[in-house]
Length: 332
Image: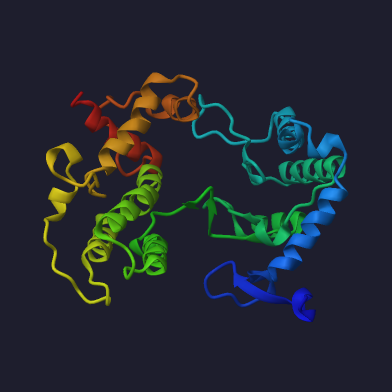
């Protein structure tokens, strides 16, 4: 056997764009295949107890631990915020290990949250990832109060953050803030290339990957049409470009490609034309499901989507999405 079989190459993968600190990189080890097989054999010989390795409940152990945090927060009646006097109080949103906690900017409330987090960490042995945690303040919070809260919790202040892939901000998003969607699309298109892909393969990739990404973002945020048009342009170029990356001739109109297969198209869909139907799905859930969180939160403030006279400038972006989707429900 080659004496170099144990050698490993360490590679740093950037976690964010334009990394500047060591914490912004994720180290990975590139090992020899033989080196990977030997630890696998050893690990199979020293397995963990059945409680961890074979118990069918083991995937839910983390969820059970997270429920402790949820119960501790819900126990405090003053924790949370309301968007109107009749709306239910929202204290936190929890998905896996991503947690958002909503609280009024008061010293007492902040100390209560800090104590809850401290007890939770002691109970479960988990630890807060401070570099990835942040504080997003409302516009009415003054600078002095911000400074006190940051000193108590020890987290940095942020102007925006991403939660489950969706960017959350307290201002009207500009076009530049959606540039990351175009960057993600271009990164995928560049990684696929076009040299060894047939026309059918390119269409399948665009349909199943690129347009699926847009379906999520157009449902949860108001993306400018110029962004959607730019992405459609990238998709068209990817489909028709030549193998040598030269500009190819577009033999079929884009609208024709977006028609159903049984009508002679390729089953793609226009990014712009699909925005309304996707939002109609959210509006339908708002109308039909009383237990839907958006319904319980927004209905006391805005009422029905068919209500006329809502002020367009003072409503939230979520309500604008629901109102836009309700227009397509009128056609049913």
